[in-house]
Length: 249
Image (cartoon, rainbow, N blue to C red):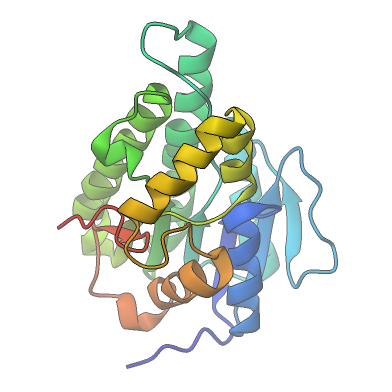
């Protein structure tokens, strides 16, 4: 079983913060050669990655970023599409802008990035890792459009896994429950009383630790595994890395 990432050529979108930044840290430390994309948030230039600015909601920008990454790396073995965003979106109070933003940032960007990576990978195979969400499975009373967009990511992942498997390209999605700047922003929308209730709820619904996980130590090893040759017989799966929150299967 080969878990080595030595010289593996990896592109990570949304890599300046949160899960994407954790992926850069973990995979680079494991020997991978990493290119990261960023948009508005400037990246940590001290990190072990080559950086490319990219608007993941613009198909042309994504195609150009993938082409630049391939040129820098000499090919592409792994795409980790970590770019995404969460917004409030309670049913009955949703406008067109909210719908467009959640679909564009979370779903359309996944389609654009996956297709651009596939065009490179279809000749020699590769691994694509998308990001879904527990809310895409259970729904959400406060972020319904985000949940719907992530449900679309889940379905897209299964669809392209079926289509691209013959070319040796695997496509899987992760549903993490880890502490990120996005999770912090969600807390910023809550009152102190609501935050206290939320923390109590986490203690009840996450069996392992009763809180969100660490993106480096808890999610990182799973990303490394799915980026390795050891995961080449896994495709079309939604894998929860959430301390037992969902227990899907």
